[in-house]
Image (tube, rainbow, N blue to C red; front, top):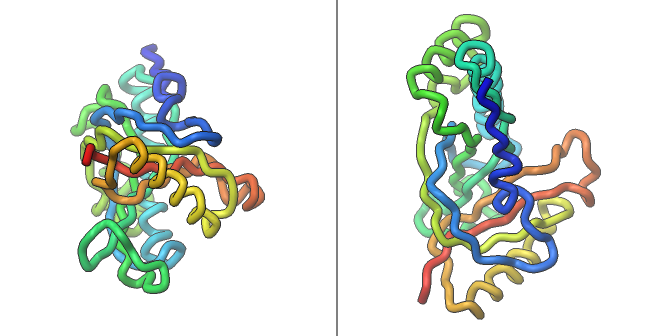
Length: 204
């Protein structure tokens, strides 16, 4: 059995410090992804989450049983930007928020195996938007990030601190707002939720 310790190998990306922002180099990574437009928490958003998990877990367990590759299911991630163009989105207009939800999968899992598992899931359950889940690579590269602890609607001050830090280091934003949901909102109190906040950056 080939065991991939992704949480340990990628700890610097999924468990960063919550005290000080940091500039990191994010390697090219592979994800299951699904896109949409509209407010977080609305039906389309929830269906997209359901589609990701309905494929992500069968791929994980199928890989362990059939490919002898064991790895942890990685956290849900989201990229957010303005559907009308640009990285900045207006939180007062949630209907124009574009998003891409993602779940990292290791390179060792072949695309055709993922498609086999998709077909099996479709035959058994066929959840909404399963067919819309894609396999993509994301090359974020240089990024500023920090671990934020607290309710999702309280991120603003931490984001401002990140961007100020990046500017002081000579960087400007070059990527969408990126959140990695380490905490489970169904289990943790809002004030204890852990979310990695990240932006791709480039030297000015």
